[in-house]
Length: 247
Image 1 (tube, rainbow, N blue to C red):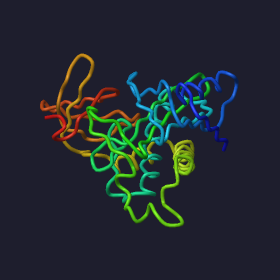
Image 2: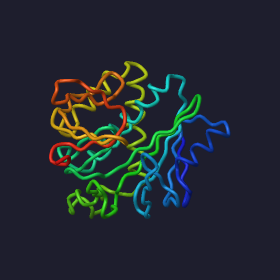
Image 3: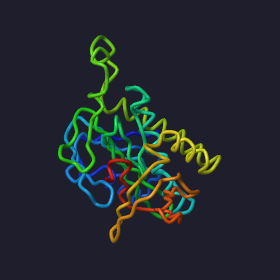
């Protein structure tokens, strides 16, 4: 596994895509101390102050576009398990489609992009700070680590490179699981860590908003929502708000 560390870059996804366009296929990970043009899902800005983890993995891909899209669930599992190395497992939950929450607050972002025979998964994890005034309350990892674990000769948190090493390992584990066994074990593991599924949900799309009960994921990762009428609707993209969030 190759790791490339940069002091500053426009975005690690953009750098990984440039490497792909130059003929590289990975697996490799690009990490930067600072991004000047970090991006989140749906074109949103990803604030990139120094001290947090900003990284992108470049991998070969010879499957369908649907299979590539499932890598976002694999990335979410990898982030969750990485966080659980440092903080209690019960504090970490997954929120559809690919958010990772700690005590109900967002701690990471995932952005998936791809080409004809490769994909790039960009991951940002708040380690030492988090943005304020976000739609979904945010947090960072240091806020959830016991202070006694941060001091002494072997502090549990030693910086972004150590976190990335765990993250890359867990991503490879779940990607190999997917390649060998398909999406079923990924879906099962994701649902085991899911936030409020089953449970009430409000879905906000570009042209409508509706509410219902989230039932689970279909075989492609879409969120299955039962409307008040009893109709089952599969949501493939959009903003979702669980429980009291949607009130």
